[in-house]
Length: 193
Image (cartoon, rainbow, N blue to C red; front, side, top):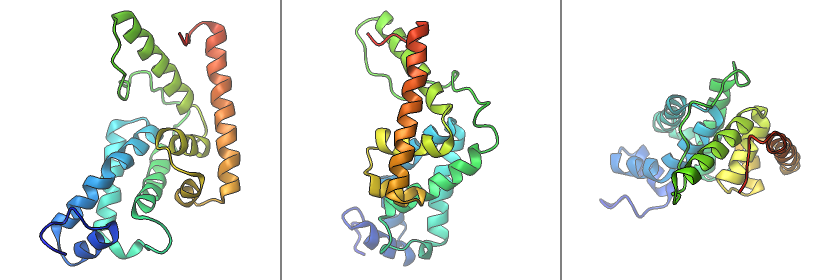
């Protein structure tokens, strides 16, 4: 790979990384770190755990790049699959007990008044709690579809399931999330407008 490691494909950058090109690896990291971190954060509910998962994904790629098979999936999909595995391991002990109420909003939209910001923060908190209450298999497909905007085929590769199973999980996740949010609306703890 040439001195300009920013213009190659992921496969070219990975080959250069195998050859010892540190800049190529840094470019891979730059391209994929945000998505991996966001996914891990939403899966674990912890900024620290998400950072650890992200770090572990890239260390694993650096230490053993031959585990990635470009014929099976894109590098981004492979890294999301690794993040999924690590996130599920990290969150498996107490996913129901953990409350996300103390977490800051991911990136609240700018509002014109303090009241609007307060309402938006409360809506975000309720949605985060409802999302965290979903079973991990439902939560992960919902995050990948709705937050990361991935197609069903890519999600199926990441979670290691058939597209039909992903559709079913996504349908159930949306239904359970809708039910939880409707309960908040009926109780008056969630106001949409």
